[in-house]
Length: 570
Image (tube, rainbow, N blue to C red):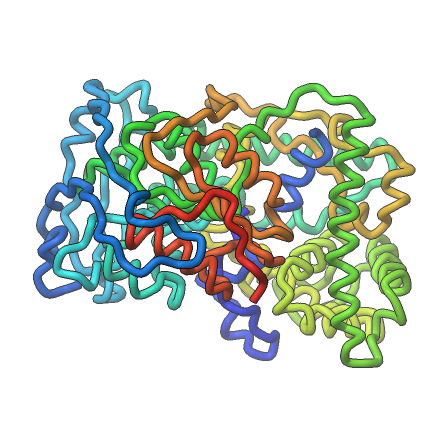
């Protein structure tokens, strides 16, 4: 569910931009939307650094103080409602003392002297602190102030997103945040530079994306299920003990060790999309250690508990998501028609039929491309390209061009390029370690319960009501059948921190619905919910000044907004 990568999708003509470090809004958000939709929908500095550490030196401890009032935003609380940290702190776990005794020794990053790099050791299994350990990679954007409040940890989502890459993205963090905090991105365990391993090979990923996502026969569905089970078994074999302990509870426990290692009494954290799940679990498990916590575009933590549901409930949820998809596609077609003639058709129904006809043809006759590493586009690759592209309105003109080229010229080069950017695949056929597809399985299978295909399949009449939705976001096979690693122990979050947590989301988020943010806010006592009139994934730093002010007032000034504040469209 990651999706907070802000760079606009480049055009295929600039193929140099298709690199492992290209992080677009398509790369993870949409892929997870499809997966999560199936689960939820179909089931229910370099001079002296006085505020922290100079390079190569351990961090000093930061104890949160009452912030100084300043000009507030519309809807922000007054000085009387400033966040004040007065509650007693729970002690660190004695059994993990050797890990909590660490301090980060920051050194200048070898690839960019604007950042500091460091590592912190954590146990592979927090219940076995005497067992194997790994090192987590951190990258710090130092505060521009001589007296920062402490450290703000950030997580971009996924699962599989790299925090050390996220913190380097230009223009995300406002000047006030950079003045107030050291901003630190970390690669979660098993991801990126934090002891990553090859869960799935490039060949296995290619086969997964190429496969027919809507098999019509029992044999076809069985083949997809067997392939999914084989992927889990291979990933577990390659990941060993670490792969079996990559769930969000372990990441939250790691985060508390990181908090102590930078010298902060309380965790200050900004997480988006899947990153909100990490933050919510942290708040539930380490409640007294919660500092400034922003959960942007939330995943409902309780959505991971999927009880046995009736077919009627599955159908009701599918209709809801089908209508959401149809609205999104109608907006896509309307933009296409703003520059007539639209090559997809005269109206939404025509365009839908055109895309379905293309997918039908690809099912039996894949189209060629100019890429040696991906010489043809199958229905599966096309579904990936279209499904991801629809989630990023900035890319819609390119998606129209790609579809037009495939339909009129039988050339799928642009669709192939689109799909590769969407899944983080380079033109040479390689996948970086910090992509959803390559890294998510050990996290997903620890956090999500196993479902059968029947648990997630709407009735035929429901799929007929939303035919393109049924092709682009079909029910998926149970991808975690055969998982033998750790499972999330607490599927319900009921956090009661002493200070308000900020939960913010967009009303028409195409990846994580606003209902998830609303539910999460209900589950965290004293939280403040802010809704933004926007149709993108991620509220902060996405072009809405009100949302930006709310987040920065909260993080930089300690001013929580009024609960229920609504930010108008901009």
